[in-house]
Each structure stands twice: as C-alpha cells, then as structure tokens.
Image (cartoon, rainbow, N blue to C red; front, side, top):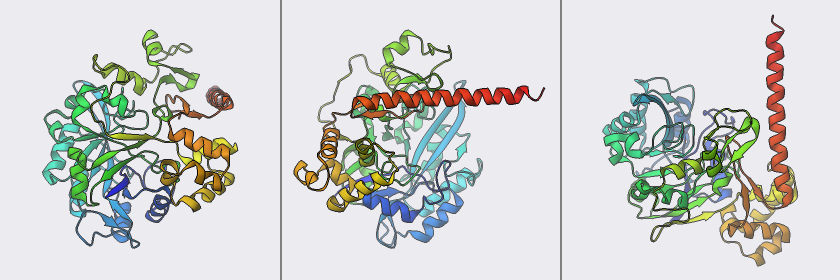
Length: 433
C-alpha cells in the first residue's frame, strides 16, 4: 500500500503555534493536502496526551491511532537536548516515535526525572544524545529516535551549532540504534548523498509544522509502500524496504540553505563564505553557517556536487500550491483570493498532492488559468529558481524577475525594522540616565 506520511508535527501546546492546532484541524487539512498518515506531535505534554487519549484509539493493536472518522496518527514527539560533550556546548533536536501509549507513559516518566514537560510541547533537557537513546531503548526496542532536521545550524546534529561532524560522534555506542535522519527543509537527498557516513541511514523528510495550513503541512513528507502499521513503518525506516522516497521543497527554500547574516541582509554562497571566513562583510560579526557550507565541509572528497549512488530512492521537488497561487495572483499566501483559487482547483482533483504530482495540463486548463497551470507544471519539473534562504529567512521561489525585486525589498524592510527597533531601545536606555 502506497501512502504519504508527515511524521514530524507539533500541537497547540508547542511554542509559536495557535490554539486551533488541534486533532480535528490536523485531520481536516491532512485530507485536503493528501497526507495519509500524520504524527501526533508533542506526546509528552500533559494536556496534549489527554487530547490524544480522548480523540484517538488503537482498536486493532497496530500501533496506529485513529480518530472517530478513521484518520490515522502515529505517536510522535520532538525533544530538545542541550548539554556539554567534549568540552563543547551541544544543541540537538531528536524526533521520537513510540509504539503505544504505555511506551509514551514510560518515556514521559523518564523525562520527568530530568526536568519539566508541561511548559512546551518540545521540552528541553540536559541529556546527551548517547544517554537519551540508551534510556529510551531500555524502555522499548520499538521506540525509534531520529535526528531531526539534521543539518539545521541551531539544533541539527550535523549543523554548525550542534557541533558534531558525524552521527557516530554524537551518539557514541548508541549510534547502532540510529537508522535514519530527517534531512530538513534546507537540504535534499543529493546533498546528503555526498556524505559517505550517511550511506547506511535512510533519508526521511517531514514538515515540522507549527500550523495546519496546506503551505506548512506536508511541504516535506515521506512516501511509504507497506501496510499502515507501526511495525511495518518501523521496518521501512530501519531497512529501507517499503520506503519509496520523499517529497521535498527546493532546499534553497529552507531558512538556512546559504550562509548569511539577516541583520545586514547578507547571503553568501559556500565558496565566498570560506573566502571571508564566515565573517559578515558589512558588520564584521560571525554569520550563521548555512547547510550548503556544512555539507561541503563534511562531504567525501570523491563525491563532488552532482554525485548520486546506484539506485537511489526517488524524490519529488515541489512547491506548496498556495505559494504558487500567491505568486500568480500577486497576493499573500493566506489571502482570500488564494484560498478561493485553491478551493476551486482542489474541488476537481481532490487533494493538493494530486494536483502537484499528477494533474495533467489538459485537466488543469479546464479549471484554472494557463498562467497557473504553467506554474504548477514548471514547479513539478523542478524548473523554478529559488533565491536561497539564510539565517532564518525563507528562500523565495522566483517565477518572474519581479519576484527577485520583491525578495530584496523584503530584506531591506527587515533591516530597516531591525535598525529602528535598535534605535528605539537605545533611546529608551538613554532616557533612564
């Protein structure tokens, strides 16, 4: 059975999310998006786990928890580990999958011995990756730990701030229990193929959503071809059998693709970043080192850009439909105009994934304009240039020359706003003397 899964999500109990990020809305928009299986997110949070217990049941004992309408969820959370190892500060996010509620209870009890769980859906603990995996495996061999957005500078295991140059260094003797990584928005499979150590790990993609809107949910996802049971999905993650491939955004869309300094509007490719030693040419401060630069640092010398292994898993590079429509109609992604056109197209094709992956030109032209049809097909073919994201700024898909102007205009506006805020803070401080 082929299905699309998004197994890294958050609930309304995580920071930077809304109160309406609940099970009902997750199910509703998953059906619109074309996501066949969702993670629950945040299962250690005391209020959210009660909502899970009340709203979902695993009547057939497969480890898949279903709503009253039958929509499937898998028990999942993300844990932030902030600790010291080898004399360096480490910050790593890990995705955790659990086979049942009893395992969730035991994971929660373990974490309560280390700190609080009630303040955030993604709580922080002073636990090393080594001890974290060791203790979870003592609870159940069927618990799976997956390094989340592995290349992200701030909390990715291979990112600059994580401080590790390999999974073996991060997980020590427990690396034997790591079978996959989540590649994150700022990298794609070809980038990961260049790092030899990653050959033995499965490459997974999920959205890490903080809202249920279709331009967030499923923007990255993993395609499975197996029965929808926890056991079969776990086997696919651990061995690759039953794992068909991934759905990706262009990695340039991610917030940390290139090295840069947002405060100065500086975005630099890897070669130039090395030339300036990752120092911002405008202000002299250290820039946030992007994912492309980190991949370049850790890539095997025999694997230049463009390297591909034999028989790699297939991946699709897509742009969320709402983002395409926003560019074509010239309004914000959340505008009523975009929503109306989105609903018009989805009413014919059923799901957004069907539109992005399968809808023919002939059928698209029956329900929408040639301009929008051409943009959807161009995105499907991977022909849309993306101005790279950097230092927390999303990349911008460039469908026209005006998009590039818009990109730089937004950066200029952001810099002006930052400078105004700094000036206001300085004036307030001086007024106190």
